[in-house]
Image (cartoon, rainbow, N blue to C red; front, side, top):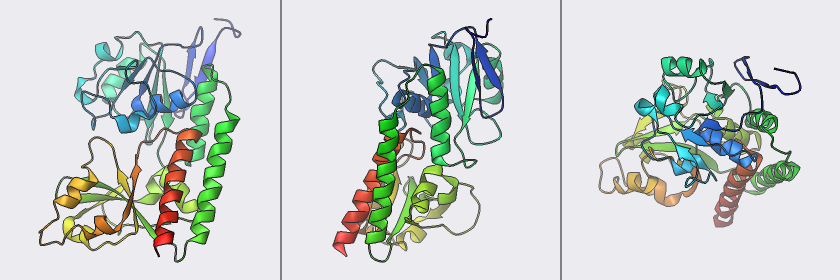
Length: 300
């Protein structure tokens, strides 16, 4: 292997992956695949996590062309033979800390890495959202992507607009991020644990903080507690395994814990806790929050 022909990339575990030539057949965790696509790299295949099913989660998939990208499955369906069926020459995975490959059993990840280079990008609380995007950008450029300064400018402009909207809206309305879990419980997001929510807080958005207690990323509460909350704006988890917000609200009708007043009175913005970590996707999210906050302000 000559230095001129070698491909190398140091991932967030500090492990260096190498190949005799630039990888072209990429298998990626669905969030990573959606991010690479936004940066101009097309994955050949994607896989899900234990939360996913036999079909890809369209919320996580972003702009991926799911009709032409192979979805190899998720959870217990992922074994070495399945993961290698498309003959990938690189696997791109994510981690929430500790270097563990998210979505794969440790033994499966170990045996996979014995046969194909695996790059792991940390998407947890260790760094900010922009820094996560920068790491994906570095990886994408190593795989042949061109820089996209227009997308960076779009993201920066969306952030400045959101900051201006927050400053213009009276009384800084509260914003609650959540994920309904069945008919009787809801997970309330702890904003500091989610890089994209930390961006909102940094831009001045008044994020509601759940009470201290168990659960690193979420505080799970029952319907009675949820019924007491009255945020003007809700960021609702739209991943396939989350209970749709309207179904959770409808189940409250006639319940002793109170009706769906929380959901009826709030504006709702779709929120994907596993977003594509790209400037363009980030700009769309920031714009949706700014639009909703402007609408809330106009109603006051």
